Amino acid sequence: MASHHVITVQPQFSAAPRPGEWQTGLMSCCSDCGVCICGAFCFTCLGCQVAADMDECCLCGSSVAMRTLYRTKYNIPGSIMDDWAAVAFCPMCALCQLKRDIKRRKEQGIFW
Image (cartoon, rainbow, N blue to C red):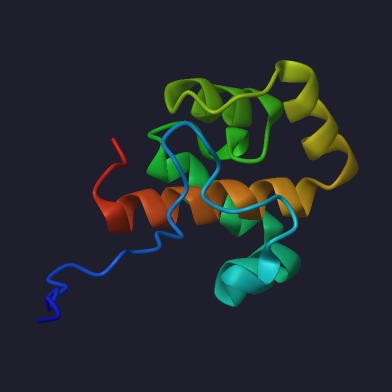
């Protein structure tokens, strides 16, 4: 007689990044078009939103210091040189990545 196995739990795939990683890539603008459009057409406004989210001065939102502070707060690997390069060579992408990360961490309840 053949035995019958009943599967009660299906394997799950999680697209969520592991703790200590950016929630999206530097060039992942299509993952949140609203943030990307805001960054493209009102960079200063997006910088102020990021600063407000982090309880910092509005003028600091798009700075290397803000990115470094955020990265170290959430144990995201990298260096000040990486942060400088991202902000220097693609400031809009760097700021949008930071805002997307904040937004996703808030949705997951892991933003503090």
